[in-house]
Length: 548
Image 1 (cartoon, rainbow, N blue to C red):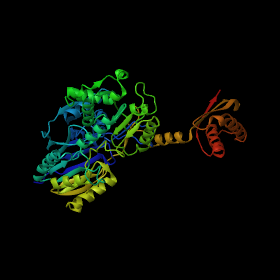
Image 2: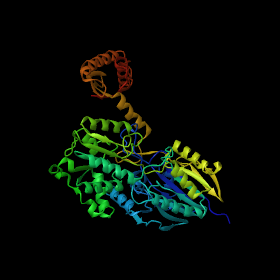
Image 3: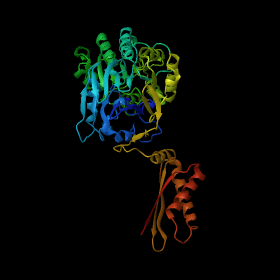
Image 4: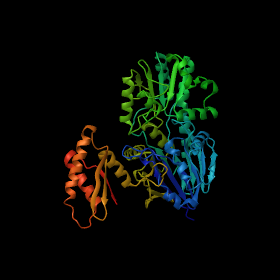
């Protein structure tokens, strides 16, 4: 009797960093792995978030047996509230992952109450024909997991986001995956983020030692910025503060909420957290005994560190002699904004430490040699690189070939690709819809392409409103045309150029035909032509003709 085929369909995370989501479908059962967001780039004008396309999930929603969450980063859980507006599958994850997710639910409304199920490390669960075990891995957020998924078609191993850190942890992680692979791994899905980076990354212990040296040598205030989910790094700084007799003041809603959550769940010990004080009391403490822990390491607009850098924070300022530590990587696309932030901090006399100049951060993703070790440990028949831009996926496929995976068994896929596994063989099937969906305010249907193009044009050329009042019967002008410009002209030129534009339009209107014609269209054309000739740009023109 032929075993049922297994289909693996990525809906996000293959071809970009972020928006991770994958479907495993077998017979009448299906499971989802992760459901994350991607943050917009500068070309996504006004868009708040980007989420996966759920259309295929809605087609097979009767098959969905559960949503598995590997860890609590936004690119893995951020889109869950949007998915729950359509379907309500049982959700499985670690205690901290589910706690982070539950805190997000407060901003959303659902038809049915979400069903959250906590899983323990190495716990096995049954979801239809899928048997799933959660394997603990090291990452830049606590309680991260890889997955071992037994299916009728064979065993699938998903590393999740992982790294190999201290020697004893490294052996534990590899031993778990090696044991899973010894029972026969049909397919390995492995994190590709750092495939371009050779060598051995520093350990978290080494980062803590460097942070201690910097903090011990500080003569004035320390401003420490970190991702709010990096509880391990936050705990390290709290421990350092205790050793050096300093107080820690939190600034930023996300870091305040996450630290409170970690304390509640006992991930930060009460003694370690005892150095935390109310930010409103900071003025009572000497600067050399003060650490401000804040959000904003990616120069996010209006974040705590961003406001500090431009001296707009109501309680914290950067002064000569202060030390600022950015304990995070520069996320691709944020480099220019972060550079501006660092420059502004230097202008205020602060000394800034960041990954390019000091070992104050280590990535949560495995380097190339660690990726090789993972492939050797699992020894899969088939290999699909995941979690990365397309070049990362290609290079990871090449790396797998270099450690013995057959070239014909390596598949570089993108979002929407459908891989089918039947009787130990792999086949590419018809793609499914996997377009980007833009969250635009309260609208999650997605901003259409033409809307973004309009926003781009407005940002580049500005807009001119033309108001004209006309006698409908006589077809004669009663008032106007009056011009109002936004984002088009410099103030010193505006009055003169708008008067010239009005004179031009009045002259041209005398040449318009007497028979019926589209006056608004003619106003738009002539106004755009005038400004193209005058300033070299065609602004957006919005004519308004009122007939009386």
